[in-house]
Amino acid sequence: MELAVVGAGHVGAVCAACMAAVGHRVRVVDVDAQRIALLRAGRAPFFEPGISELLEQGRTRELLSFHVDPAEALPGAALVFLCVNTDNGPDGSVDLSYVESAVQTVSRFADDGAVLVNRSTAPVGTAEYIRSMIEELRGGSLHVAVNPEFLAEGTAVHDFLEPDRILIGAWDKTPIALLAEAYAPIVERRLPSDLREMLANGHRRSGDVPFVVTDPASAELAKYASNSLLAVRVSFINEIAGIAEELGADITKVARAVGLDTRIGPHFLRAGIGWGGSCFPKDIVALQGIAETRGLSARMLRAANEVNTEQRMWTTRQLQSHFKTLFGRRVGLLGLSFKPGTDDMRNAPSLEIASQLAQANVQVRALDPAVKTLPAGFEDKIELLEDPESLATGADALVLVTEWPEFADLDLRRLRGLMRTPLLLDGRNFFDPERARSAGFTYMGVGRAQEVAGVVPALPDAEPSAGDDEVLIGVTAARR
Ligand code: NAD
Ligand code: UGA
Image 1 (cartoon, protein in one colour):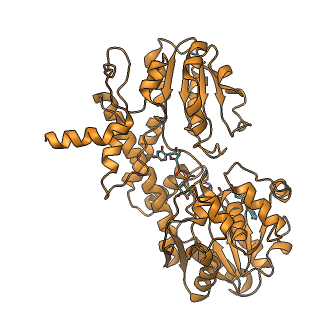
Image 2 (cartoon, protein in one colour):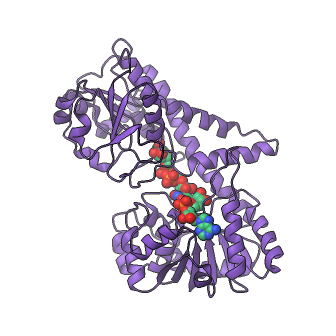
Image 3 (cartoon, protein in one colour):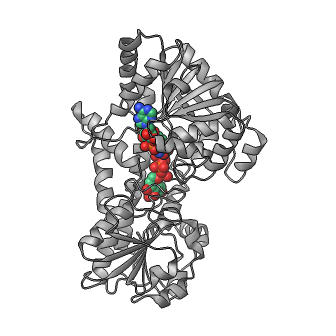
């Protein structure tokens, strides 16, 4: 099929590269000429595992092309996917100006009968608004549909090609039929062998991918509800982590025991320094605003946000309880991106931590496998280093901010020897506390029994390893 994608960001570039990989001819248009130049040169404008290979493959097979001129990209496409940014404005409401200008472009250049498919996360009623714009601009000769994207950064290619579901919101049959045709290789799991091989390490499932069709409003709300529920789960486990910290329990064990309940499941129960990224923070605030402007209270969303704001203070609070004064201390951050597998720094907890520490006159240095440039305004708050030894040298504390798998190979004993004070704050409960302590560190994890003198006793020597959880839970149950 002939497809067009408007917006070459995380969603647009991944959608285009994956659609080309399953055999469609895809033309991408973006207003950012620099981004298009990079993509034309075969380079992804962001770090995302697997994307470069697919972009290169699409280019060499001549199935994928990048344009700044919509007149080159849009004519001839049966489906036009809108993947533009929908950030929140200063008052928290969704800024639809990028959607509006993209709709104007599509309206001008798309063929009669083409389907404009909104993939950007946008408030309930946006598809209706787009339809009214199209009606006004060209008398309604385009179909409109919604197809929310559920990919997560760091696993985007896998998530696109092996989704949990494909969600379509539409008023009439034409868009549904065309989208079903476009997604057929993914729904029916008829991926080319090279793609199957590439995904072999991920969890592959069998049976058709659920292709869910709803009215546009339900599809739009389902996207916000999905992100909000995931964020609520993380805030919930972070709240329990605070209780665990006080009571001397270990949240990683609590979460494992809770997540084994098949009604609950294990995902999004990892306690840490709070959620961030380009989506949870903006989408939860947006949905809260949407509810409140209609006079509805959004108590769960508000509470999840409050817990998250509080959680982002964890690092600073731990440092304050450990040192008499923070003035002049040196702290090394292990990781800067909002999660592993991406160089995305949008709303990353690291930025907030760095700002809090810089304000307390702490010298902040950082190391990240993917982040090589700092966002504007942070150049004087964070010193970016290249190796863990430099990060540890003279440091008063190391803080694990992003759980990059690479950090598992760090020589903790050697790093500890280079530091001024051997404090390790594990913001993602990534390290084995025993390993860290036996390397000579004072170790603190989120929601794990702490070592702050006089508050919570240190763990006993015979503390079982994470692998012993099931046995422990089993014994407790049997005793009861
Ligand atoms: P992004 O900021 O990375 O990319 C958006 C792109 O759209 C930019 O390259 C921008 O230049 C381009 N653009 C803006 N206006 C345009 C126009 N009129 N014509 C052509 N191009 C235009 O954003 P993203 O992360 O890809 O997110 C896009 C949307 O998808 C958002 O609504 C987001 O909430 C949603 N979403 C994002 C993710 C994610 O993981 N990043 C996942 C699911 C959904
Ligand atoms: C999230 C959703 O997972 C995607 O389904 C959705 O499409 C996307 O938002 C979006 O709409 O843009 P993403 O933001 O890439 O994807 O990352 P997640 O893996 O969801 O993580 C979000 C934040 O929650 C990160 O800061 C992560 O560290 C944190 N998190 C996640 C936890 O603290 N604990 C967990 O157990 C899981």
